[in-house]
Every structure is written in C-alpha cells, then in structure tokens.
Image (cartoon, rainbow, N blue to C red; front, side, top):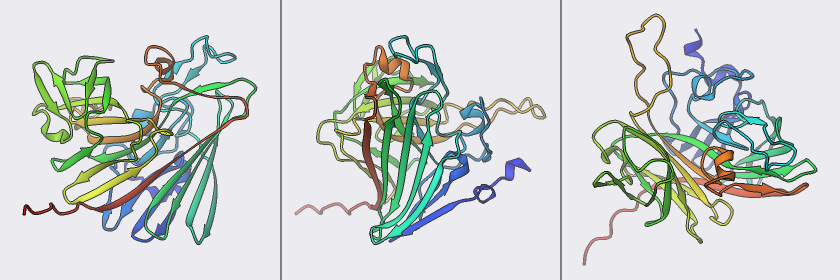
Length: 338
C-alpha cells in the first residue's frame, strides 16, 4: 500500500562521521529524511502522508509535506512574479519552490574532511543552478554548503529557506537572539496582529497578553499555528532548538543568512482533506516545528519584492554562496550558585 512507502523504496544515501548520520533521498528532491546526532533523530516524519514521487503540478502540502528537510528556492510559497522582474514578469512559481519536485544530480565523494553528497538542481522557470553539498565531518558536524548561480543574461530575484521539520513537544525550546525583530506571516487559532505585525523575540503580544514563544507548547492552551520571520541581528552566529537535555544547533553567518523562518504548529493546522471512506473523520492536527534559516522573507517571492522588501538578487553570471552547519549536543548543566 502507498501509505506504507518507506524511504528505502526510493533509494537512499547515508553519510556518517563522528556521532552524526544523515540519510538523503535523491529521488524526492534531495530530501534529508534523517538527521542523527548520537542516539537522537531530530527530523519529524509525517505519519499521515507517505513518501511518493513528485508529479508535475502536484501540491507540496498534499503530496510532499512528508517531513524531513527540504530546500525552498527561488520562492517558498506559490506566487506570480511582478512585471519589475525583467524577462520573467507574470511567470508563476510553485509552492515550496522548484527543488522538491526534481531529481537532482548526485555526486558522492569522501576524504579526510568527511563524506560529501553534492546535489545539483536546474531552474525550470528561472535560469539558475542550485547546489547543496552535505558534508558529514569526522568531528560529527553536518555542514550544508550552498551555491546559487544565475545562468541567464538578466539578474534574477530569489528567496531561499532550508525547510527542516522537527517534532514539537512540551519539552521543545527555541533559542534565538533575545529582542530580535520579527514579523508575522501567517496565524491560525491565535491573534498576533495579522500579516506584517512586528514583535520582539520571544514575547509576542496576543490581544492583551504576552505569549512566550521560546516554549511553543506552553505559549497558549488552545491549538494554534503561526509562521514568523526573525531578522537575525548583525554578528549572530548560532540559533538552536533544545529538546529536554538535547540540543540542535545551526551555526551560520547572519551576513549571509539574515533571517530565520519559524513555523510553529501546535495542533492548529492540517491541510489534508477528510477521507472519502471516513468523511466524518478529520485528519489529526500536526504538531511540528519548522526551524528554517532563510535568505529573504516572507514565504512568497512576490511579497519579498513588494511590501516586505526582503528579496535578494543574483546578477547575470554571479554565484551566491552560504553555509549552515548543524551539530548536536547536550545542554550544559547550570552553574551552581556560590
């Protein structure tokens, strides 16, 4: 049955180094399906949506939102490019971008610096080449090295976000720079002021009360979901998620990667329709956390080019480079009072 499809059914690549292990499914857009540090696998798997090969024109949320770690480029949400994009005005870009629905070229290499899986995608609606090299080092880090190259004669706009989904539990804590500016992109079951409303991390005003979103499961009793974009301050070098005594850290350079997209779904959103054979049964709510280093905001390239003014451009022949390094660890014990 399709509902029992496993990653192995599509072919996987596994990289190991130190206590880290990464499993990649090239046929599913280069999805990283497992990210291990020690005994912990950090990525969420959607129990309601099996893996399946992407089809042209398919909906990401209905067919490919199966969990794991995808890449969104040159947009994250479906949109139509405005006329200011020379040579591409009026062109439609698909939901979650173009990469998840491709089968990228794959090259495997190994050396003293670690095992490397190099994946290459080619733009379909805009002229670009997108590359991601996943390197698992002997020290147990997972380094994602990115390159986006404009293959056309005119400059092209883009936004990018990594799209790793993590489980959201009562023990989940999000650690971002205190006081960082953020804006609301979407809200479900919670009032954060609507699209574009500004707040400071981690306390957001909801009606007449403050919500502390550093512990998302405790921020509100009722089910809710929201998508936020945090502007990482200059000099920011790391963001992390803590789960009990375990810690997942993303090391980055905020000059290269200036935003973090934060999707919090505490049972407030599920796009799947009711089944035809059980029409009275509503699909169970999702509980997951999108922890998404990003270049540009919000999710649609159109809005990034417009009111948000957070789109980025690549000139003809230019290559944009950036790196995210993921690592696991244990939360240090508190320092005792003297």
